[in-house]
Length: 113
Image (cartoon, rainbow, N blue to C red):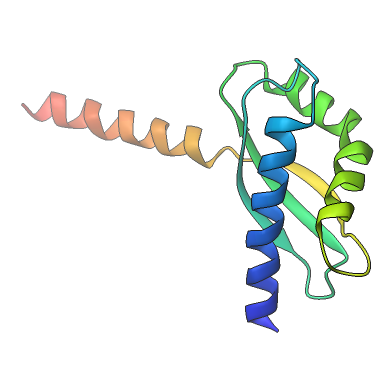
């Protein structure tokens, strides 16, 4: 079951990336990257972790939420499973957090020098 779940995570991530690049025309979304997908064991809910290059992430997340139904319908056509999972978009802040930690470490190294 774990193998099937991981495979579905990868398939959904690949398909959603394609959908966001080619099909969704909302300029408010901007440059959106899917950093990860976590689907439940029964394949009914998929948490989609996203990050944005632009600074107005709140506006971009609202645009993604507005487009959720359209995105899910396109995903359902591309998946070969009976029922398309419900999708929940979650803002991935791990990249920002990593950059913040790295800058703190750099500052500490500069003080030691």
